[in-house]
Image 1 (cartoon, rainbow, N blue to C red):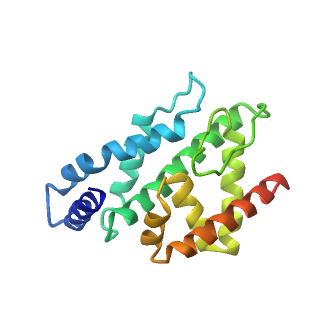
Image 2: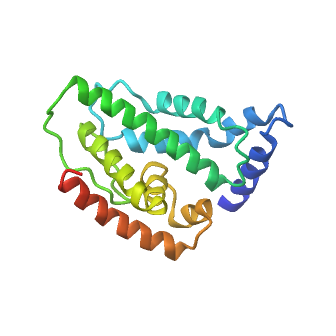
Length: 190
């Protein structure tokens, strides 16, 4: 089923380069639920009075994706890679604004485990992760991209490998290394 959906999405993305006027409408229908699920996972641990809701995060992400419509996406994984990057920027910008408004909140450790992607009251840790991820990108862009796709994009090892055009084994090694590197960088304050 996922492969058929992936193939259909790829066809829609190829049509979205301006040749198919209905492609944008079909794209929204094809990806909305998955983007909303991803947004819901990212925001699940947020405080109850949090002003950024999953629907708003999806809409903001989609608006940013419209700017990339002529990117020549080749696959579902590549599309969600760009979506992950957009979602990361939105979440980090929101966290920075929240942190600036509320300095020194008693935040907890931000987990990079693939099954535990909480944000909660962890704006400061999300900003620290973004800073460390930027440092990692200066050292090794590929490893940084793996974290972005896995953590912010929710992509599987296989989808990440496809989006990056590398092997699953490479993604697995990069993911393991990057998590350890990021934990150390965050712990040591950069």
